[in-house]
Length: 317
Ligand code: DP6
Image (cartoon, rainbow, N blue to C red; front, top):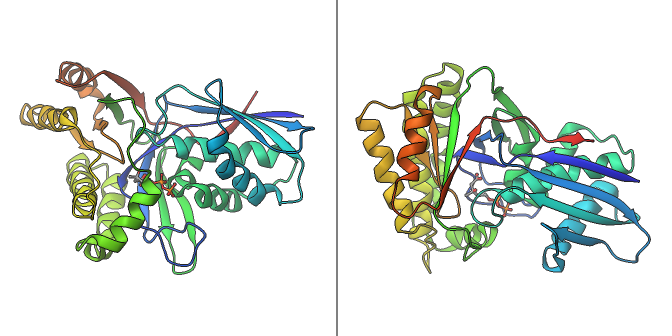
């Protein structure tokens, strides 16, 4: 039995940066993202006769990533399950701040559910994806997606699909290596040591409301304002942690200046940055070419990837 699924990474506009106490990898607050189209992870799952699961990532055996994958398979299929060989391929750098865990774990739960004919609900699968990696729950949906954090649980809801507001994303890659510290570990450090952490959490509902409303009313300026501010607040929390968590490089800063000069010329564009040095520029379709060309010409940019807003995690042939 062999099953394939594909999912796209998502880019948070209102960030998830902090976990709840009590386990289950539940986020401390809600978050909101756009799912990308042109970046993807494809997962092939195959029943195995071996005593252990196995994992190949981009053509190379990856035993160090296997425990997290096996735990996710246990949560979907139960621990008394057959062993599985997992093959994961992505068309973009992984562990580099491009949300590869989001596309990987959302594809994994979709494929695992099919492999054994479990037929679990969307909300159960989103929960399992989120337990493996908080941002993965959002890649279960396409378009503009909110992770709503209730007092005892979380759920995913789509705010608008890609056709309803066809924005574009240009991802400027400024380094392709693995990030120095994983986001999960970095969040825990922020919670323990940043003096700004509690005010960051307290303002999240406010930012979520602004972002949600700006999407529903297609107010690009308002979405740009809240997204850039939310991103800079998250990085302020990281920078004020001890030891500081600094994912940026000089290319990251140069990209921000490029976005500012594009804005000064009247282009509809704004930036966001995650746990890595890459800059994601979200723009109106008419500014796509100018934003791409300006970012490619920016010091420190290795390449720029264009993307539209993408579809949900799904089975493929
Ligand atoms: C900065 O989802 O990678 O991209 O739950 O520990 O796997 P874990 O964290 P992860 O964190 C994503 C952090 C972020 C912001 C975001 O995507 O909302």
